[in-house]
Length: 439
Image (cartoon, rainbow, N blue to C red; front, side, top):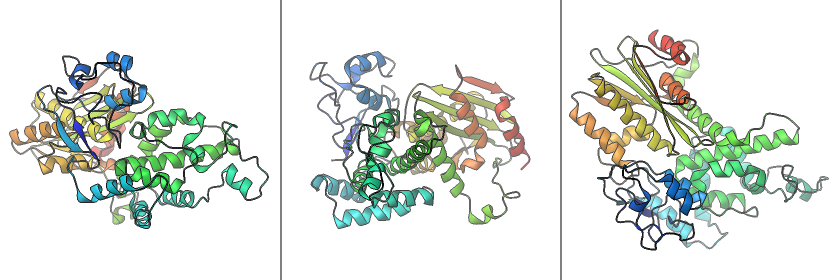
């Protein structure tokens, strides 16, 4: 039900018959068969191990192409392996197995009391702002004033969508199904393959999603729904400023910033002027590496930001790297950490302490064995480096203490080619470096 292949060499996984696409619940390609029935996934790769993009675009539907390109790069020496899709470490858990089993065994359009209770508990545990939780609560109870809702309540309205003026404006249509929201749907790669119709009950939709994708992706989708509804209201009130193509990117950045702030303890929030969290310098005799990743869903690119500083906050190396890919946030953050290690080792800047604002990456590295995860081979490389380098370590840091690396990652999204600065940093982060060094 929830298992699929993690692609390594790709020589043991068949393209059309095996489960390897990160799309619940079939995990199979949906494109019509153009290649040989028994062709294996390694045939879709170049000699370097990277995907043959031209071949993919020629033989697969865009949804499948996006899904395949979202898979992380793997060295040709790595074997294919089975993983459990619904856990970040790739290992099966009874909890996620139970949830998936409930969804698979339930008739379409039905939701049991246990499932409903599970959804409400999950909603209040989501790491999203309270106002978005209230928005979702109202949507689940059909209390959003869509045109269809107003018409049913006797308010003068034809019930049609104010965007497309073609379909009745149900809640699902307003925040997902409208034809004018095509750019939002295309950028939500993690939902490709799920069938969502305008007549679905919002509560049933959220149950389906909760049991089909990762919690971090559910949280992101909640923010996307809320933002789309905000733009819909702007349209109703004839306000400008809508950019639907940037909704997913905006939601991702907004959620990262908000979750990072929540990592700050309540006592830190009291005196904003004096207690804004700042960069943590390394121990004497060590270098500090900070890494981060950013993404632009619309342009299908990833930005990696890396900065290496001494105990006084002086920048020794800074790097901004752009990848033309659409990896998951977890894969992008892990690649940033690995790039930071490579950069420091090549420059002889050891021993070091490396900080990232991805707690999942830190936990997977400290666990030591994540071979079942999509990101497992990247984590394995990080672990191998840290074990071979004396006294080097990795730790989590809140986004507020990772501002320079984050700014470099954002900068990487707009550069033509990779940039590296030695004994200096780009003007866009000079002020942030100065603030950090005054700690």
